[in-house]
Image 1 (cartoon, rainbow, N blue to C red):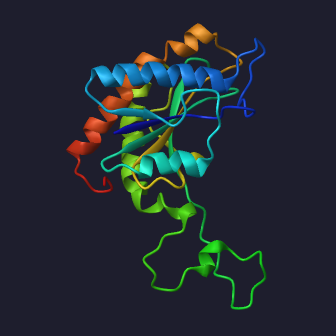
Image 2: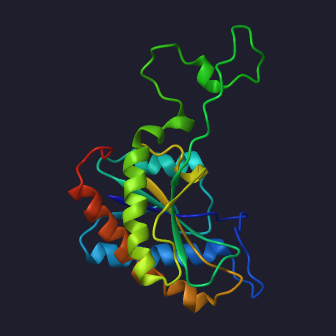
Image 3: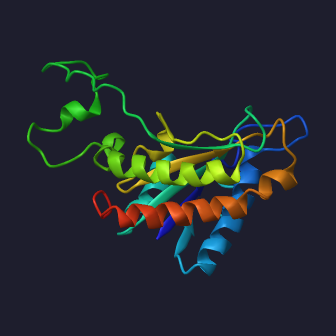
Length: 214
């Protein structure tokens, strides 16, 4: 199962271009086109939204977490950057905060409420066990994107991407540039190479072993 996550939606328009392009609309169109192409390649594909709604980050993650053997891909269009380039990201966790002492106030981290030795993982840390697989997937996808989108980097980038944080499976974000320097047709044309990069990345990840894939 591939879960495609068209970013933003509803009142959250995302990046906006001078020509009136809204990121939320472009990413939905791209996600639909990517879904069609991946479906032709025999992948099962689900969108976190298929209209102008804006599910919460946790709701989007929960859709992916309901499946086994799943890949999560969040799709974005940047507000700036070199038009016609694409970047793949995997999540980057900050250094864990120290656990507040007993008697800490109501602002204490929710993680502190989980008993020591508990098998429960805080929702905000769900992606952490899958970072290695996510990193490898992002690198595989980025290598393909670099071939299809001239000027794109050869390697993926670690960044604190909230959309990935609660996913219990390999998860990446892909950002295409940009609403300020591209036409809607040019951005929508990215769907074909994007679908191919995702399919090739998943295939390469599986060939390296199943670690990190539920």
